[in-house]
Amino acid sequence: MLVRSIILRKPIPLRPGDRVAVIAPSSPFEVSHLEKGLDWLRSCGYEPVLGQNVFARHRYLAGSDSERLADLRWALADPTIAGVICARGGYGAMRLLEHLDPSSLQHVACRPFLGFSDVTALHLWLQRNCGWVTLHGPMVGTQFAGEGFDEVTADSMREALAGRVGGISVPDSVVVRGGVARGRLVGGNLALLCASLGTSFEPLTDDAILFLEDIYEAPYRVDRMLTQLRLSGRLHRVRGIVVGEMIRCEPPAGADYTVDDVIADRLGDLGVPMLTRFPLSHGQPNHTVALGLEYELTADPPALCPLEPLTP
Image (cartoon, rainbow, N blue to C red; front, side, top):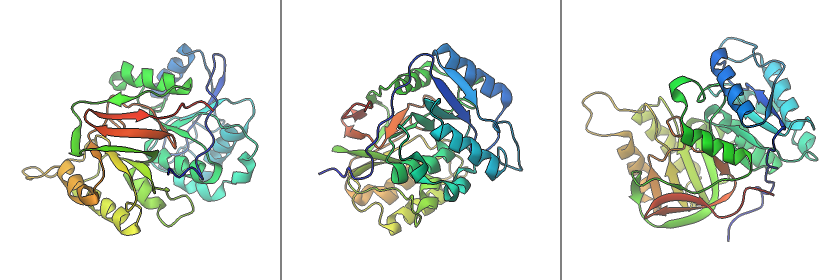
């Protein structure tokens, strides 16, 4: 039986004219990139509203903790805001979690919350503490600028914000182990998942399909993080595993292995269906999926398909 004790609240779909908060809870972004993302939101019929501190800067962060926290609290709780989209990942979201109070969102309707990479920390917190189903997908300060933009990514994001997530079939993804798995989709950025272990927002992976992705991590560091997940016990009862494209995680020149080999070595013996090189990460396309929703993972054909609607 699927565990449903935490993930219960689905986001209310966006409608034309809705106000969408754009915040930067992690690292700074290129202003020109954000402007293109805001134009895209307007083309969808939404009214993007910038956080008061979105252009703040502090060292390697998009503002001080108090500035980023103020924007996050506003975006999650303001009754005039219908959805939240992060501008960029990078680093910094995890610093905000100890200052968030889940009781402040107890009577707030679940709204679409979208981002990935470092935003994984906020996904985990919202799921564990508020029971929100959240959207893992592109951010308006990065992937909607210049050559990083593609129609598949945009269409997937547009549909998810409107309350619809579809199946994703990828014939050229790598099947590490065949079979069929059904469960809640949990996970996100591998480094952030490992950093969450031992905290009050670590992922609940029992009876779940675990999703992993990362960027700029050498294979030996991927090995270390996967080993940490194994030792934590969080992999003992997963039902399936889907791994993103692991962008720029190549081994040294001349190596006789790939990061896919490392992943298969560390996870292949778990005995569950497993796919790698799935387009749910820093590459293109970057499909939007609903974390907390029940999905079916299949190996023949390689696909990830929702088993329930995203709408409440």
